[in-house]
Length: 101
View 1: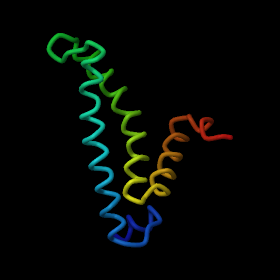
View 2: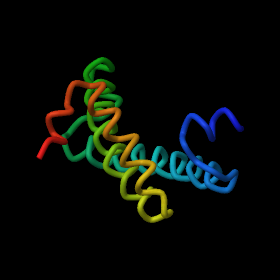
View 3: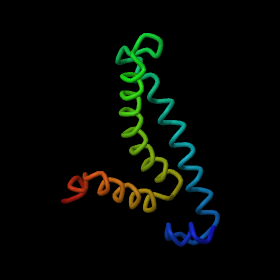
């Protein structure tokens, strides 16, 4: 736990627990939200080519997850941690220009 706290720049075990809860809630919510969005697009698992279905589903889940991560991070009082993580991820994806003012 100490390595994780140092790497993430956090101070308490409670903060780690809250961060893990945010990750869990965000992942579950993003997957739940993706289902009706896929249906709205008219894609059904039984009738759509699995490659198309899963690629589109992942393309929907990924940005949904990113937005929800910030929202739930804010709700749980960890906005700064998740915003810094989000900025790092955007830079790694080559989308750092979105952060420039």
